[in-house]
Length: 421
Image (cartoon, rainbow, N blue to C red; front, side, top):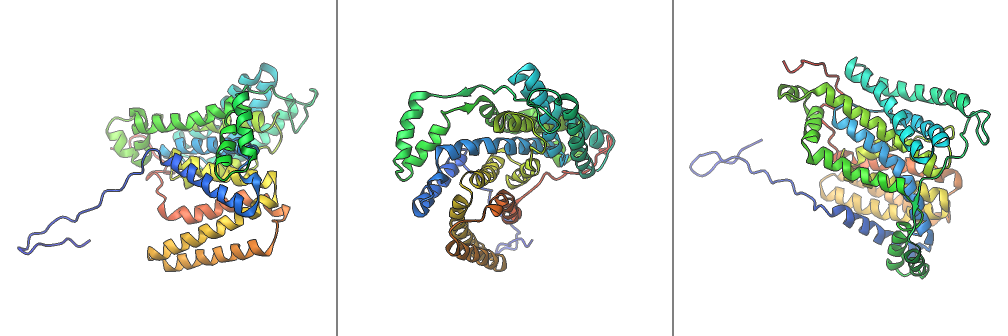
């Protein structure tokens, strides 16, 4: 890089503009902005279920497993260990919730899900941190082993029980929920008036005070805990340094392997809890194939969030919301989203062109034009395609966000103790 010189020939250092930090309340602003856009879309298209309290409740339940799996990946990868095995750890968590929840109660089911996820994390930690197995190979092996192990355990423990069998557990007791009756009823009246933005905001608030599971509240609290521990404590600083430069961290006295091992165990615990939420909140029992690839979507949400809790929360919200729309009103609500996607693609393409990326900008504008044409050509999206919405959104978001991503520098690298020397 060239360095400017003064009239006297002296060389002056190049001035680098400091990176502008986003305000701490930017997440709230983004949420309000998204709600405003959805409210406008609801008014234009007439799809009232876009922002109904029922949709918001279902979205919260859909977000939590993806978010917890992503948090698990965040802990692991910030310590430099890639965890493709999140799906398998979630599978273990679903069985743990079903078995312990049925025999010992709801909160025992939560603990069982966490312990089973930690067991998967322990296997991954031993393989990658202790024996230096390739992270991807270990994660894929855990996914395969967990699937077979849980099917065997289900046939061993649930067959013969009332409501149980080889593919499902008996009903699990529900975790307690929060309901504020008078406030919920008042917000329902405002919601039913369908006033622009006001009714949509009332629907969101009503979802937060009507049959809100304590497990959902705990899960969102864990996002704050993760942020605080990893970015505001000396433990978190050491753990992140292990993921950036383990040799340098070890030269400063950090127990690299210990931090990696601990991070992968926490990762497994969070992924197991994600499986527990699927079994105890999204459903009422363990079922075979319950995770449905959400471990991989959680990994995608973590990457979309640039390995940060706030971005992960936004990515989980996007994927969870699109999944909910596909399940509730199917093609009608997803059809309304096509219009929003077309407009967003147009603005994004123009922004790319202004940044000097003419080719990618033109491609994005072209995609937006095709989506817009599709919106006006059909009245509803066929049901067979609505189930694909979260996965398509995952691919599109990762493709558009790839230019600004920065993974931990030593993520996925095999590290041997004593490498600093």
